[in-house]
Amino acid sequence: MMSGLVDVLTRLEAAKAIDHNRSAKTIGVLFTVKMYLEEAREQMARLQRAKSTGQYGFDSASVAVRSLHFYLICWRMIGKMIWALEKEFKFSAPKEVRGRDGGQLHLHSNARHDFEHFDERLRGKADSKGTRLAQPNILAVLVDDDLHMGGKIYRGVQTSLPKLEAIVRDLIQTMTAEAQQMLRDTATLSSDEA
Image 1 (tube, rainbow, N blue to C red):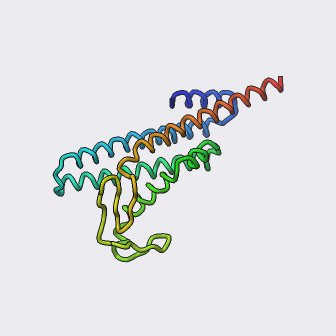
Image 2 (cartoon, rainbow, N blue to C red):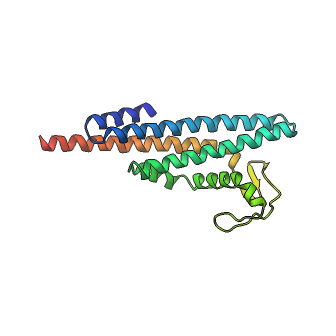
Image 3 (cartoon, rainbow, N blue to C red):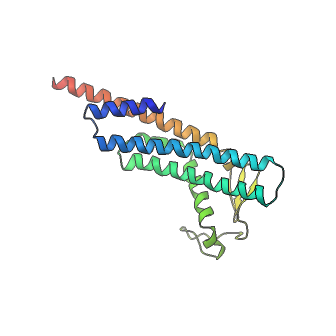
């Protein structure tokens, strides 16, 4: 699927519809998205392995919490790359994808933010919205499919990998369609000029 988009971007560049810089950076960002998706899969597998041991000692809990943290980072980085494709490279497809994600990118980004700034919140510091932790002594507790952190509950975090995969699939399909339309428009302009 990714190779089709890379092919269309290369053809757009050859047709002078987009410059080399935009094409190369877009391809780089898309490969970064795929890289973080693969890492998210690995982190979720580690989290599930740690939970499946049935032993809730420090080692398995440590692996689970670290894996969840890095999993949330993957969500955040994919969200940042989608934003970059929209804002920096002026594609409309990423905005459409963000509109269809059901707030998942935002939810996981907030969870990652709370995770990474937990030390500040423990000392009573409010987050950027002025909210203080309701239960500052709870770092991260996994209950069923939810992440409980400082009194906040992030629902569905542990089963969200298929949602992330769907977002990435949607991004590549939607960007491929947009790039193909750009290519058709370029061909139409060229034939009109001839």
